[in-house]
Length: 426
Image 1: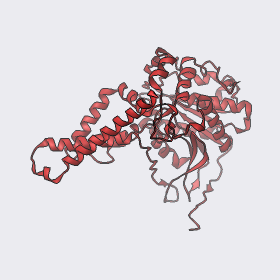
Image 2: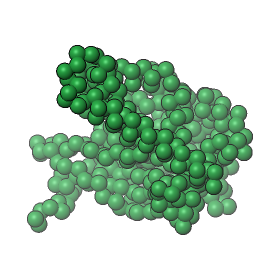
Image 3: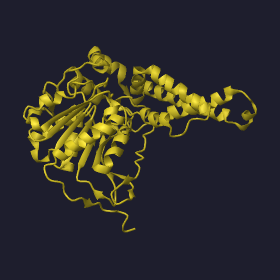
Image 4: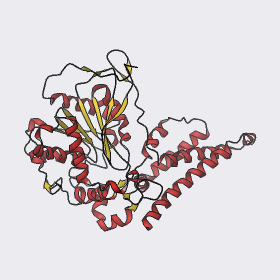
């Protein structure tokens, strides 16, 4: 029960800070204060505005807000999200673009379940949509999932990916970003034995911890330094009474956010101080660079306790993927069974989360895959975020990934097919 009280206490602190910000903003914005020629009033209003927005975003799932897609017909086509497979802990979502010629490339983008929503990959989605028929895994916030839905650990995550790949069929090209890279590799190997015809054409792994010990980082050091008992005691709490998942054991998003910020506390403190100054001077905007980044960065979701703990224990501590000793439902998963799926790894030379060497280890595990089906790319000067959503992704990595997909399509380019326009009848 004390864990539930702690969960509610964190939510109360967040709510209180949001209220303080809203109060300061409302008071300083009162018209009568405009008569007082004192800069402290403007600073109070600016502090309140930034504080209210900051703490409000922590419990709000961001919208996709995908802009219209330009096509060869000279028109911009609106983008709709459609749930293709609906499951308790995550959905398979399709970015539907009615009225356009559907690209031949069918891509499944596997989003990480590491504290942020799938919308963290919004810029990745926007960059791929003009050239791909795009699907994404949209994981749910554990606090909103009733206890009656059961558990969700790394094996369940892997089976979800297996089901999504089966749903999309063998012409799919999978791109896994960060955390899901080892589990996407395991899901592909699982299909290689259980249902070879359902395997995707290609698998691109971007900045994932296939072998965390290949190049240690602060993240891997923390995983080895803490015992599982310590992690469970310090990180796991029960969802409070406010949410549908009341009583579920989770790694709270607010606790995860505090960990994220502590890794670069000085940088974040300066960013918010500078933003308050810009608001006070009237130089800030609702969708400026600061708000665009932090509206997404601060939006965090709870992770099921069993998923977090099993990830740390099995992927980082025991290295089950790295040692090819992973199993699902008691059945060993042999990565060497992958013989037809082309595999590409992408790393950033300045990645301090999944350092170079961790992801490319996947190629050595694919012992049954011929060398011509293997590829790797190290992006010089790129950090973790840059290899899937930054300038490095847009300019260098994205074209390479699309070329890799085309080279492993298994057939010559087909004529594009016209997407059904559901609004045509109207």
